Length: 85
Image (tube, rainbow, N blue to C red; front, top):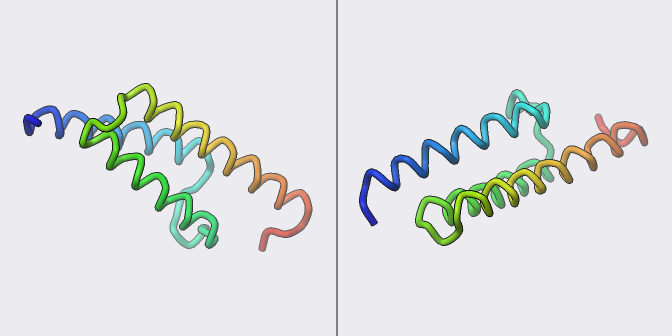
């Protein structure tokens, strides 16, 4: 795989993750829970798959968006139930 394609894929992944994480409301590591850490690991694997062209960009955006949507929905439910610190 050509290095320029890798650079473009990394920049794309960074931009998508930056936007989605901001939309999810995560601003600092100190706001993170153990579940947030698990989601970060999954996101890391998704980025790896995108960088090495194991998945196309649209699949990356769809998977990342859905993962962060579900994660944010569960955070909201936990907050409303009083389970958030």
